Image (tube, rainbow over all chains, first blue to last red):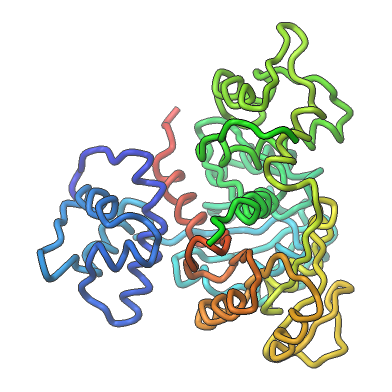
Length: 211
Length: 211
């Protein structure tokens, strides 16, 4: 991919949503799409869509729209989805097990290669993925390149686990524990706080337009 | 609570995070907190924290900081967390089961009262919650007030289920299926798209500052 102008953070935040939407259109066999269609699917104004897409060097043709695959590939390259990632899960409780069993990540380029839990006995699997005792993580990380650690431990241990993950040289954390994790600018962290989303839902529900 | 000036959407989006943080401080027995501490915990600038908190009629006292419980209660009232919600789960796959088993929502005021699945036989439970066949949803909704429907179905059925939920008069949807759901301004929807969060993590990992 050619070096491009820096894309603003506001636009970057919308890229995963566009990517997801374009993938859906592609799998439905749609090759051209208008900004109005995308606007309707994602509840973003069509002019915002056009402005965002102008960052990728494509301008929809009047009456034809945007090329779905071209745009999807451009966005994938910006996000780093044109490669594969080795993922481990730490914490094999309800959420950890659900993620281990979910087959959708593989299609997106994310291979779950192992799970770890303080209570795990070696030799077991969840959803076909080997599960090891947490004390084996250091040794495992020396033998196998880990790109992403998913933290699904209870909140009490999440920060300690995150610090250990950073110490082992893993550069990305996907955190599902209900604590905010931030470990500085040299490690990438995405916090999924389900309670916060639920709180926002409560707010929205209490502030609906009365029609 | 007194009627207050309208708080901007940008501030509202940060409230769930503040609420969660303040609850954590409260449970750690901390009664006063400075904007600098909150800034460090949440990776927001202290001046942003002070500006946001000024919306709730509290101004931290120099050298003493903010009253944790007062602020938490103010934010809870704005978000609508000063009441309880009846929640159902639709789709008893991996994620649906994990949510049904998770005990943390009850502490926040969200009571999961039932789960529904197209393959369910009546009389079973998951994590103590009764599970019914999806064809029973309409009857159930007539007998029991449902505040929130959690959608954890496969993506193929999510939009149809969401439309049915809206038809039954349920006013809030918490969507975990990997499709974007928007049903107009008279129904509240929060979409949790885990893949999109993972895509953003990939982007962050590929754009770390090299130190």
